[in-house]
Image 1 (cartoon, one colour):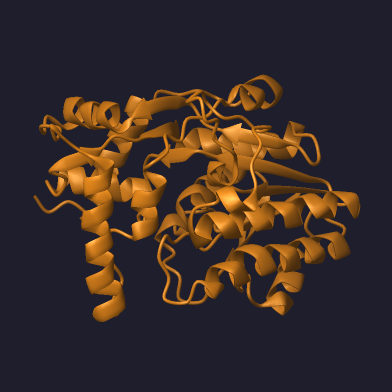
Image 2 (cartoon, one colour):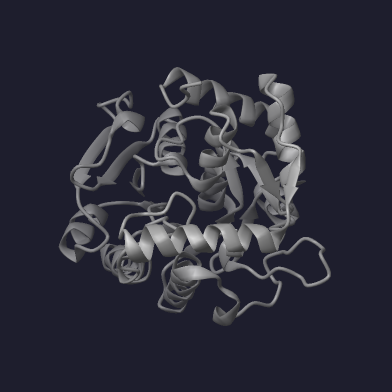
Length: 333
């Protein structure tokens, strides 16, 4: 079997590639020119083929899909701030459409499209959301979430065209190899570098990145076409996450709970000055604080029951993330 993996140089995609390699499968990786390849440097060259391409280059997608049995589409333009927001839509929406068309034309047997819980609904009563919680484009905060919501619609449309597409919605993965890092990885880094004096009263569903990668592959094996699966685990408040990091590192968790209105004002002023006046990327994109207004709690029981999604210790995953950041030079205090 030959599997195409997009986004393999990134956080989740690199774990997917490693698991496929461990299964002895041949893998083809679509890699953008100039991307850091640290996360795929140790893959077995006898099983790995690298193709240079881009989601915005349809010709490279056609070449990448040719001869493949499965496609694990993990790549995305994951930014909460962009000078030109249309770049997110070109990669996440148009790129997904072009890639799935290439897969359909190439006769790919199964596709797993990696979306995000950010494209799902959040119940107003505070209970965890699931795959069927009502949601619309108007509920999406920011261009990243909007682009992923629209990309899901594209993915679902290909099921009607005869392509076997399964959709997975990872929550908030943590663990090693968060090379960029992700926004959640940045929170861990800010904690380690003592740049987190306060926290906002929000919440996240944390999950071991290894479990997410396993869930993506399980979706390829056992998922139902057109069906969504939340890949998540433990719902935690930000304060609980900080306390976990306190216990793991011995560093004191911040004790100041910043009211949402104060965070909104502070980050809003920062973005006004840094983005609109200085024309540089803000350290804390305004979309991030807008998202923090809602607790992103979710129920992953469908994936656990239908796919066999593992539910590994979140604390251990955070410990691995801490150690990886320290070992790889991200921590300077």
